[in-house]
Length: 524
Image (cartoon, rainbow, N blue to C red; front, top):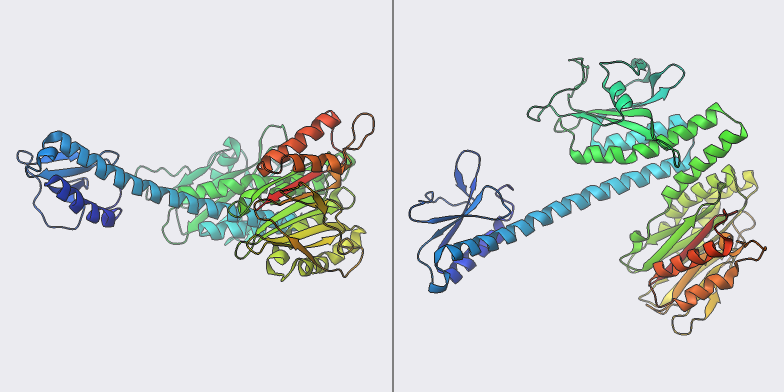
């Protein structure tokens, strides 16, 4: 049963209208656990069952409709009372559902924002201690915990060691034996499940053995950090502990959901750092590169970020080795949409790091730059040192589409596969390079072209699609990609994308890709 204020305004308008239609006196009552009280703020005597009808309101347990008076001829009797109760129940139930949906959307936004922040952190560093401290700070801030610790399993000693903390000195916490029967962290690690305690919850039992843990607050959340290799069995590698919550000493279900959502990302980062530190052999380096690539894919935005403005479909199909393909989608001021695709030269771990840095830089500069050419110039400045050190370069295409103005402005840093397909004729126009790739030269300009709203299709893809070969060495080629876009230009972007990837799978016989295959399609 909701609190009395929920739905009061709507009910104050609804009851007089229903009373006028039925000719009856109507009041809504709710039971507060001891007695009936008016749902609205009014001083009225309780109903007399012998004189008045007390009808339960569907969908709202503990709430009744009081019906008094003879009413109109077409509204008398118990059937009329029941119908009135159903109408009120439907209205109040709909409002209750709307409140719940709004709360769920709010929690979901907070979760997505935190996951994105952590993905950016992981994209900037591979040092476990640095990443762990920054991640722990973000998580603790969101759930309002004064104290937070991240313990990681040491397989050699079979203990949990503190690697990052907030509100706790690293040297103040001794290693925890994994088989310690009284340690909550040890139990969480062994059983791979969340433990939480809320002292305000009736019947709640503290799962720990020690009465005084030395914390200011008694409520806590303890979440396992789990890692699963692709196709492998999940294994615990650590534990996150949060306590001493600001405000009410109770963590919510949303807090638990939020912490659990990022545990796997932390697990992948922890495992990644361990592999780098433990083994420099070829097999271990390869594995670490795969983990890094998995983390990079989590940085890529969902087409949903611009779904309100455009029909977008995008996919990066990973190659065996770590590559450097990426794309970005940005919802800019007004109706404008930003779309970017990039391809780092070469392969391997260095290319993967350049990709992660470029992805992070694109999100910053594309939002603040006045034009696509300026965004590329600023990105080049951010990546100059890394590109020079690794002797790599980056082909990059960035466009800003303004459907309302009917224009597309773009800058192309040596990316060869960027096309504007006309919705009426199907003609594919190549959006030529306006400057050299990042890392191979500076300068450049910006071009613009007409954009036919709800007809034009922007098709961006990388060499991995074009250079894919069949069993006799033939290339898939640009034209096969463009033919699907041209023939299906009136279809949703997702259908075009699926047609291209289905075709290339048949063309190559399902053979593993030697390069990442990326395709972005946008209609607005």
